[in-house]
Length: 279
Image (cartoon, rainbow, N blue to C red):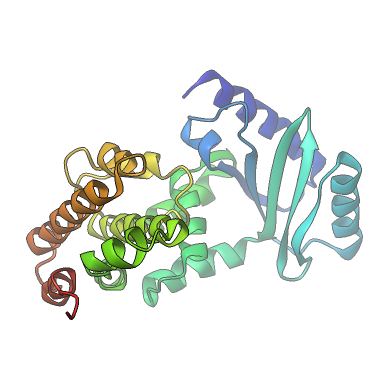
């Protein structure tokens, strides 16, 4: 853990004093600071779970405090849970506040009926990778439960993300047309799908976004050799060469599905990759 992360975790502990301690079941920091690679631009993401709903008066006080600091309410209500952001000592501090039963329900439902909802995946991965400030007995219990990653979810994720355009789509419809936005949009879509596939193969919840995904990739045991360096290198490469290298990488990921999850067929994905443009 770097020094900036340690400093921000210390501030996160101080920040808890702004909130009612009575009924606070647990509190934890998520994101780059919790993972130990925060920098001068990192905000502090803190989740607080209470055993009872925040009152309307308390809610208004929290939102007003956020506004005074230069922040505001993101969304939500006292009944449904809410998120606010403050600026404290020049650092943006995000707070998510909810009833602890919502957290239990989130994890229980994902295990009982797996789904591809990246917001829910983001929240659950936050509990797994987060830094506990208070209530370790609760956080540890939820973390162990969430790590019972169901095989059904693994298969669901791989089936969901194994979608790729034929190679000619990028070559003909993006590069030859000079459509820069479509080219980079397609490139990021493909990279995102490969990351989703690898999350499923590795029994990892999706991080919810590509920001900071290098840390997630580092935790993966199943991945193509040099995966992060190879796909990031594509972004500055000559476009035709980049597309060729991209599709080599896609086939390597499909090979990993065949090896580690053979019950999921890659046949249709491979047929689409090889599809030729009608003359």
